[in-house]
Length: 290
Image (cartoon, rainbow, N blue to C red; front, side, top):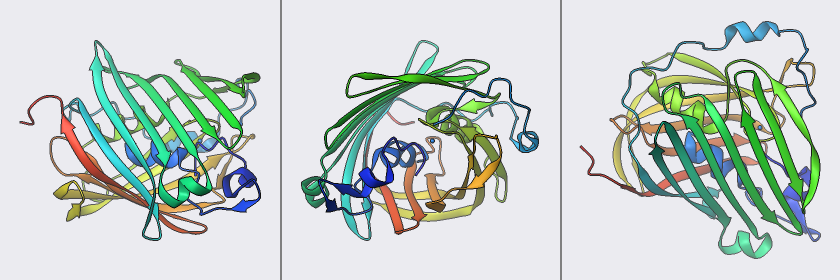
């Protein structure tokens, strides 16, 4: 999944134990909750041809999201393996998203994993400002910070307290996870419409293509909703700024509430090992929902 800071070996083996495929939930806790990324500096690289296909429409006129607190569960093959608590608020001209995630149950017995995530975006332009993520698993502690500007992003990171060389990725219209979700939910989301955004969640850039498939009714743990159904496909941006298929991610289906809130209700992602899901368990708005 995009956003992973853990090697393939760490993802599926810890202390020699073969783990369930969902025992690396960092990108799930972040990416699947929100809808829901190794680069050298490419500041002087030529503009790739695919960049002209990226959606460049301004933010839509859909009402901004309300302040809320929500809980999501993440699972695989019917097994709940992780849970997360998220909050969203507006502070002045900044939108802020805070999240915490952790493995639970059998998954936690096999692999203890904890993550905190914070992201801020400009409330007027919906452009990303900064993202901070802290992960703790096995014997590793990884702290990642992303600082965005009009040119792109600079990533700084420490691993077990040791600084890693900063990385810069320059590209216009670059998003983090929060700004990508805010931008997409602001759009009309008419049936069969397609949006393409470039997202830099943590370590790499991805082109996310979102296609609206239609409307349907959906029941989740938090309640029953009229929902907008969307498909998601990802292509990784390689070091030469070309696009290549994601090696482990195939596609995902996302349902968001078809109302003034446009909450992420459920995500089902098909990866090389099967289907993983995240689902809204509860939500509480800080102000009465009108």
